[in-house]
Image 1 (cartoon, one colour):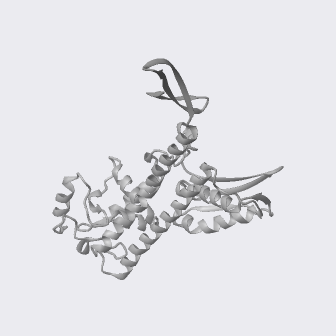
Image 2 (cartoon, one colour):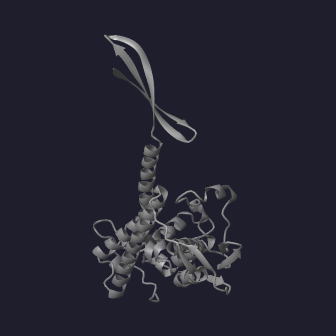
Image 3 (cartoon, one colour):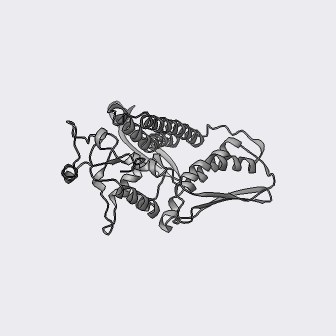
Length: 330
């Protein structure tokens, strides 16, 4: 018997079948053919999950890696001689490395859940206390965003669940609320018990999720279009940039740190890319942590030269001479 080479994948009722045709031959004559169908659903799902996992890791680690690289380059180039600045750069690198570690753990947990390999440990615990613990841990981050987290007093509510996983879910919701809070900058956490179910709700003021995006919120790692940067954040960035004096420059990371959000240097860059026509902002005075200019913006160097800014041989701004120290009155 000699197998033919025809092979296709058939999708039916949510299953994947690999079809193959085998010829039946005897004494050099073809007597017939057999259609073989093999269920490859599990194999294809595993491969699809593997690809998604790799893409998710790449997506989530891109920002912290860029920050670590930028601040490490700044340390290498010794752009700041004072110990306070070096300490700040090291703290950012350590913070981002810690975030990467937590991200990888979360991604691995997610991968285990999707493969059905995650073990759920049911415990009897007070969910009110878990929620309060999450809120207490998020207080510092909320203060940096000038936001208030409110939660009414509740009696103890005991539930059977995996305490670690519940804490992770609540932490994700609260963190997301802080990251996107705007307007009155209020976050409200509430609990409601009905029969055998306890509902935990997290509400924050700010822009609503666009209606056309609502059906996508359960897609893993989906983010609303970057154009949704808050007006408040952009306005604060423009105000800081306008304070950079003639002959000085600042970095995306320094501006983010000044706003109390050192992890948001990339957001600063995005805000500067969408400055309204009616706003006059000296964007040319903002460079990366190594003093590199904006790629493709040829006029930036000429403008800085005219303002008295000098450059090193590698084409980067000499940050030792021209980095703006916002803590010192110019």
